[in-house]
Length: 268
Ligand code: HEC
Ligand code: HEC
Image (tube, rainbow, N blue to C red; front, side):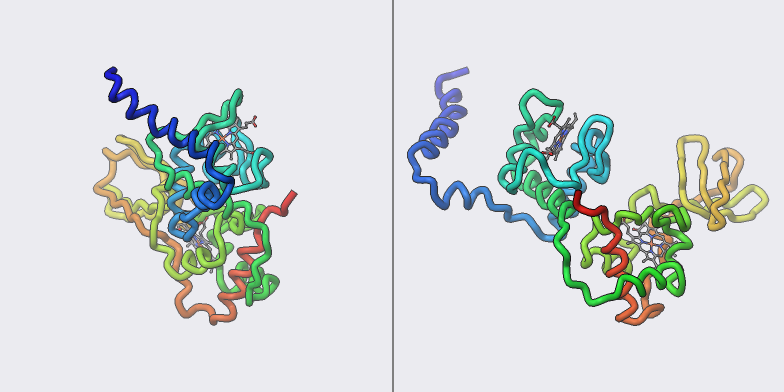
């Protein structure tokens, strides 16, 4: 390596160190340490990066896994955004917690910080609705429990919602209800199979490989098909969840949101 290219690497580090040791402890460092990426889109992006890079140890929803602790209950090693940023960037020395890939930008680290903060957001938001009414709507008029399980009761055709308030804030919940088709992961795709006898069987795509697939119909019955024994099949990549539309009044929607947001783990 030429002296010149070595200097290109060392100079910024050297200058940064010089700056930190000579600059008075004022704004600059703090300014740099302020998270500029906190919108709900940033949070969603952060969640995506988290699932790719951190989920295998900390669990897909950061609830903890075999290799990494739960990150939804506050942090032992840091109480500030800048502290979290450093842990994610650098890792924790002498632990399995390695820093994020060097190729990841600072921006995506800040997005992860925002995502983790959103999971740890236990401050009570003032919501217009009434959670008790919302609970009744959920299993009654709203018919939500036909697809969603909460604390062991309900259907399996949609995600489990016992802790949905930890992962979704009220604005996100409203868009979940108003526009369920957006952004459906393969887990919630539908398969529509036309059998050799012409009959159609449709249901959630439970698994699929080159030769076979399994689906769960609306009665939660499981079907297996070998791809060579059917006439055709389609993947439907939109959500089976109906948009609430005009089914509920605005104040009933408020009640449902208050209920859903109350489905959180308490701060320990
Ligand atoms: C190889 C497994 C592994 C991967 C990958 C991993 N972590 Fe960790 N992480 C750990 C372990 C283990 C700890 C606990 C370290 C200790 O304190 O002993 C930890 C600790 C942490 C902490 C500190 C928790 C606290 O209470 O202070 C944060 C924050 C964190 N990880 C975030 C992340 C993020 C974000 C990613 C992805 C960029 C990630 N981790 C990737 C294993 C992992
Ligand atoms: C026919 C089944 C079905 C019904 C009925 C249904 N949902 Fe869903 N719901 C789903 C599926 C599938 C998903 C996942 C795909 C998606 O995001 O649209 C989902 C997603 C959601 C999410 C996002 C969960 C997350 O983890 O991000 C919320 C919140 C939700 N539903 C609430 C409701 C409420 C409240 C009702 C009643 C008004 C309802 N659902 C009725 C099937 C259903």
